[in-house]
Length: 239
Image (cartoon, rainbow, N blue to C red; front, side):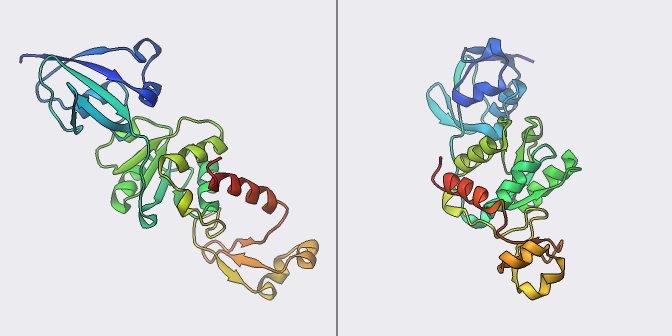
C-alpha cells in the first residue's frame, strides 16, 4: 500500500494533549489513504471532540475527511458551544465528584457515580444524548459519544468555570433545584413534615425546606448557604 504524508499544526488549547516536544510545532505524519482527520489527530492523543475548525491547505473540512498527499492541516480547538437548556445534560467520570455536585447545585442534570465503568459512561452518553465530562482523553475518542470535554483543571472551582465557559451555561443557571447527592429535582416541603429530623437550632431558626423525593435528603439555607450563594453569583457573572 502506498503511504501518504501530511503536516499537522495544532493551535491553542489542543497543545494540552501533545507531548512537550510536539507543542506548537509542525508534525509530519505518514498514513494510509483510508485514514481520516479523526484517525490521525487521535493517533497523536488529541480527542476529536476537542476539535473545532480544521483547515486542509486553508480550506475547512470535517474530521471525517480523507487527506491528500503532502497537505498541511491546521487544527483549532473547539472554543464554545451554545445548547438549548433541554440538551444541557451531563454525565461525569469517577474522578469528578466535586464537579458533579457543583453542576447539580447550579441546576444542571448531572449523572455521577464513583463506580462507573468506561463502557457504561459511553453507552449512557450515547443513549441519553449527554455531554461526557472526563479526565480520560482516550474515553473521549469513542465514536459513539455525541459531545464531551476533557477536564484539565485540578481545582473544582476552576473545573466548573471551564465547563460553564465551554458550553455557555451562564444563561441556564438555576441554582438549588436539584439534589446535590443524587441529582433528582427537589420539592418544597412543609417544616412540620421534616420537624422530627431537624437539629434544635435548625428547628428554631429555619422555616423553608426542600426534600429530595428520591433519596430523602432534606435541604435548608444553613451555614453554607451564603458561601454557596456568593460562589454562584461569581459564576453567573462569568468571574
